[in-house]
Length: 430
Image 1 (cartoon, rainbow, N blue to C red):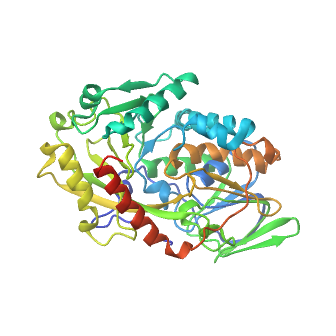
Image 2: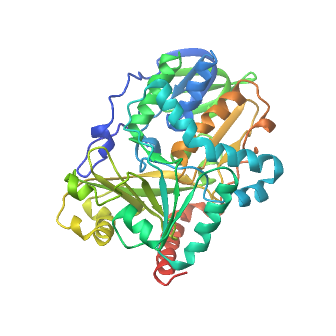
């Protein structure tokens, strides 16, 4: 998939509201560098920035423009942690990598917001906290465990009862919620463009409209070929996440490229907007089929969740989100919904991110399963360290083989069935 973000009808709101992109001319000619990066999302851009800060000669190629993929299409929520709770992560990954990944994922919002401050990135950033809300009484115990585990690790989490979450959201849909002060919001495309600008300012070369067509060994290093030229590098980083193609054998079949849909309202009057998330948090639900929402700087409501598993074909693809929003807040009835879009992210079967090194001097990171805004950014620093000589065993994630998923070609049927089952379970309280 290639091309630039377009303001379609419906179309991506961020293409109309993000800060202007810096020039990222297509790669032309042949160049020898220290590190080549394929993929202009948060992981690739962050890796380029951190390598450039080290004084490394680094170049990045991206098929569209920086932020064209999930980085420019997500819900704009900056959330800490993983889908799994810290105790589970430490049990699963063991006493070395478990605590490392918990620290990396838990501290990722701090890392992201510090980058925004350091490079003065204009991306509508706001650190109002994250609400994780349950609408089934069976979910209260999980929230209590969630709050307890992070409190044990020094995070001042709060547990809200039904009255507290109703006051925080303006709807009586929920029975309880946790509030995590580490979270926040941003314009995701604006953040991607800001990372690209920061990387360029430190000397990294960022090339848009430069799809990597072929990877080949070049002595002990690598050669990346695009339509306009080649990069010869000692180290190669692949950071293509949900838009990975056949560039590396089996990689595109090692995850599910799930589509997530988002719809945005017109700017709401202040008196109405103040009844929706009045303190400015972002929210995601803890049901089997996740819905998430926030308000932006212009008082638009952005609400997202699972939708049609294909590129949008018209407003009908987003009506389920509109209906749900109006059920939460009946006062939204009759309001215009001006933008709708979707995008793919890499969902892993076990919801753990992946770090691969299937050949010498090759690093691959992907699979944030919906947590990529903060975690993908933090992983960039990890990859930069590895590309600079830090032993892989010292990184937060263990290195694992690329493992294609059996019967991967049926992923759309599998996702549709899982969504249908999840909605039934949510309806009947399971």
